Image (cartoon, rainbow, N blue to C red; front, side, top):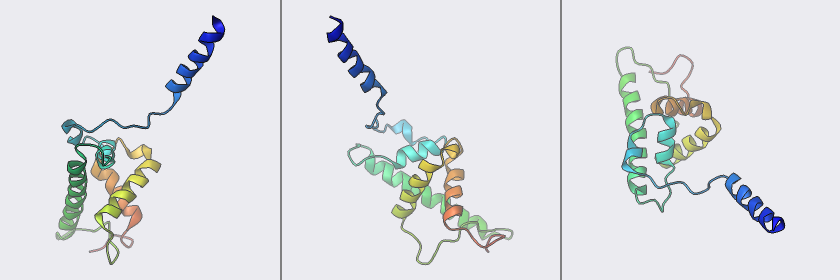
Length: 134
């Protein structure tokens, strides 16, 4: 009896220790971004997710809105740009993909507000000259 149970028990233990590869599908609640990890989760949706189109649009809109705000504040009388996009600028898809890769190697920032982590990445990728740019 023990010989029959032992192999099955080992299989159950081994299966339980494997990392989960399938991510749960998104819900509308996932779009309330509380930190960088929430943003990463939405931007990492798979094509099979029923909310994938909404997630892609949300992700691109958040990114574009944050960058447009950065440009607007930099145009003020005391404004300073921290991010200076190359010419030609990268596509939004490239920026999102780069951010997701960066986020995977910088887990220490995933509890920060999403816009803070996003700009950490952008400043690393496309910094302006020392002291910022006007």
